[in-house]
Image 1 (cartoon, one colour):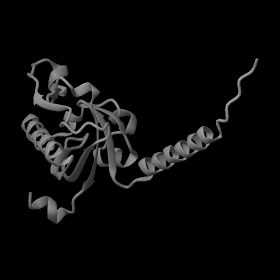
Image 2: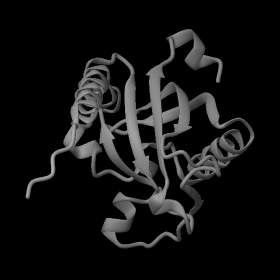
Image 3: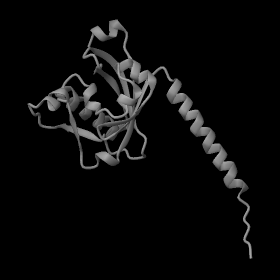
Image 4: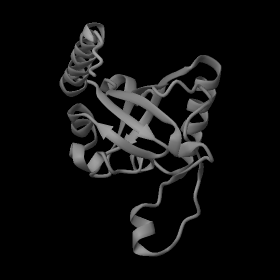
Length: 170
């Protein structure tokens, strides 16, 4: 006995989804705007434009704690609070902040954040962790600790450099 079912419609849908995925990958990799997918405080994926903006390589960014890209712990906490409020109130956030490059230089960037997991309850990180005096902790001194729901929450953010005149006004 054999059972046959027409799966033509499923194959068409599969082909459409594969095309959408290819299009998304092209937009991600060819974008001139830095894009990051972040779960909790961990960057899961960053494009080449973000690597250029930060001075890291994409593989380095893809394992970096996003708090490393903040000016300091206070800036991290304050910015994450603003993002949380924007996501709660509007489902998105847009603003400016200083981004710490790999070489330690700070640059002003425009940042836009939105959830990509369908959950609009706020960002995945919010509070600073304690600081230690050992060398590893000093090298990683700016941390935002994930909230209880952090690891399951995914958000996407993108950044672009501000012009020198805009940067001097902030």
